[in-house]
Image 1: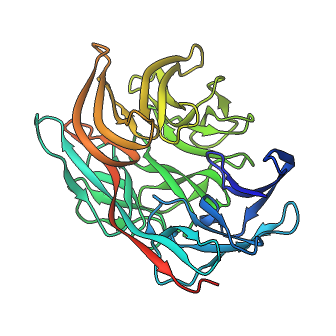
Image 2: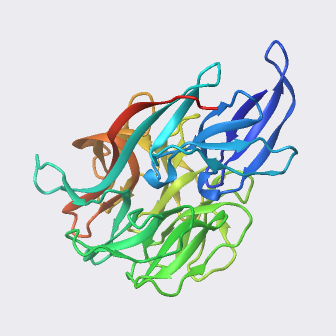
Length: 396
């Protein structure tokens, strides 16, 4: 029997099993099961235990160390059942990639700590080195300047759960804005007047869009469709919110009135997070994945009212670009299309040329933002702080 994880962007993953013949061909269709604890639902590496009645796994990382660890889960007994994970009793919350010996008596796992910080680059100072602006011992990512340039909204796990935080533009006075304790939160974006924020979350299990006032009050859900809705962003005049949705059966870019209403489909040939309207209000820029890549994407443009979809860039890391009046800043991936960033680059609208702004090294994290005066650029990436192989004797 084959066990595997089935994930779709914007949805929680499932564990699937498939009967195999002696010559390794599939017998029938997969049986898929929901995971009882939502924050663990996007499974990473999966291994069978020796009794073939349980799996051992780690959730996908780069959501912060609080979501790591080694877990076991009995295989659900019928289609549609819910799997109930149990944390394996080892003294580490940063363990993953467990492997069991053939006799079932030993277990080896990788114990490593990954951290992400928010960096700032001075675009007006050629040759300037990036500096850490917002940092903690937990994940900090997805930073966005406020429209007046005085504040930075970002995501952090420093409270133990992903939450929206706000800081001054110099990185000082970080303050927690939400206490939702949702499994996943992503893509915070300011409204043009700086009074509201839109973000996505699995607060009610499926990904949906939420709006909150800039002071943390007035939380409300914006989308209520059973499909996954994610990665919202405002139009330049604040009237619309663009987002990616699977409500048509595949991921497309949609928009809806900022105060709610019936969504309007924009793209017809696919689209993935994120999408941004140009400052002049003429176009929407969005990404499409390159094949089965988990990181690299192409960048496309479409008129705000719909129409011809035109490719703008052949390669960038999805969720890691921003549109300004003069051009597009983005993170470039490695040649193999991973989410590991090699540099920050700039596509000029005036010349159509791409230039390298600064080299970077690390696993790219969502969020690129340029200050309203065009001087500073914010970005985030993850680095492995510690990595060891650990042995557990007498595993059974």
